[in-house]
Length: 189
Image: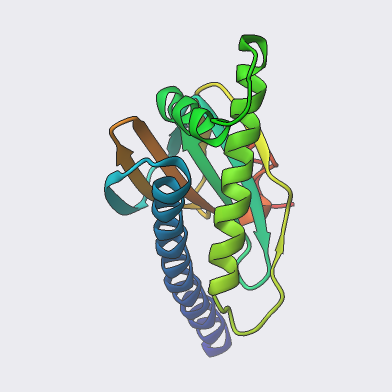
């Protein structure tokens, strides 16, 4: 009985530590995103709200770029853009290129994939997680609004950025193994 109690207590302590680290990481990712939008896209953010959401689902927007992070924290990051902001970022990102109207969608998807890759890579580089190796996946992009459903063990942490050109939600979703690469809940294997 005491053994079971001690194991449960150890798991709870470990989860609290991971939550604390995850919160620090999402704050870092949010700050890096604000800086990137301002310096690379000339898009100022009005504010950043951080929330630990105890909800049964998250609503994704027009385009969502996703990367998994493996290591001390096994989580998924999803940057979910409304259409107006995604297009504005793409226009700023490709200002010196000639983009054909038929290519706008693919350039927009490539832009949001590049943004998560750069921002998350830089934030993780600044974020020391006990000196352990961190592995990240290449970004994937899913299009169209979608709801992510979760069960009890899953947790969602969100940073929401508002700009004059639209909104961006940065979701940290974990544990990573509960979801497939397109954020469908699959449960534990």
